[in-house]
Image (tube, rainbow, N blue to C red; front, side, top):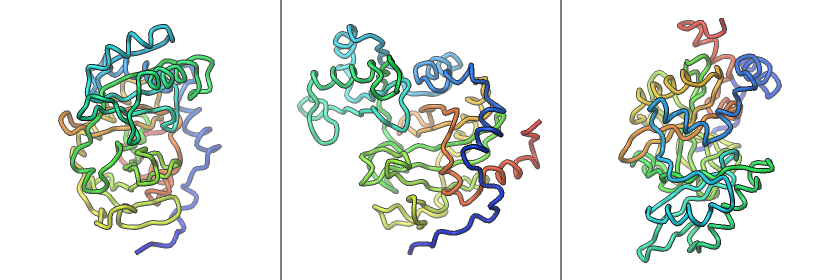
Length: 297
C-alpha cells in the first residue's frame, strides 16, 4: 500500500539548498579543506593513515601513460571498482567482475582491455568530474552483507550518515533498484529508506514520489527491520568526522560481507533528499540533538 505524500511535521525545520549552505556548509566547513572530502584518493589516504576501515586501494592512476601498466597489475583480482577521484553522483563508477572464463564483465557484457583503457582515459581526462584533469581510483569491490539481499539483491547499497561537529544527526539507507543500473543514488532512480537513529531500525521507503513499507522490487516489508552493525556504523561515523577538519559531513558507509562496515566516501555538501526520506527536517533533527550535545557552539 502506498502512502500519500505528506507535509513534514515541522515545515520550518526543512532546509533548502541556500539555507543548508549558509547555516551548515559555509558556517562549519572551511573551503580550503573541501578537497579532502571531494577527492576520493585524498579521502582514502586520510582514512588509511588513521586506520579507519575502507576498501583496499589497488591502484591510483593520474596519467594516461600509466593506464596499461597499472591495469595489468589489477587484472589479478576477481572484482574491482573503478572510480573517478572527483566524480559525483556515482557517474563514471564501474564495477567489473570476472566470469567463469576469467573475463571482466559489467552490465551483463564482457569488457575488453581496450574498453577499460578508454574508460580510465575518460576519468583521467576529467570527463566525469568537470575538471581538466582527474585521478582514477581502482579499489577492492565490496561484497554486500546478506542483510541487503533480503531487501534487494543487486548493486552496492550504502548508509548515508549526516554528522554535525562529530555527532550523527540523521541517516538513511540508499538502495539500488531494477531501474537504477546498480546505483544507490536517489537521483538515479535508487530509493531511500529512513532510519530510526535511536533504535537502529529501518522505517519507510521513499522512491522520490511515494512512500511504502517495502522496496519497489521486493514485496517483503522492511519497516522495523533491524540494521546489523548499527552501533559500529555510528562509531565509524564519529571517528571519521573526528579526523576531518570539516564539521558538517555526509558519510557514506557500506557493510562488506566479510569485513563489516567500511567508509566508502565523504561529502561536504550531502544532498537534502534525506529529509524527505526520513519525513524530518534537518533543523528539527539538529534541535533534537541539541538536548544532549551543544552542536552549534
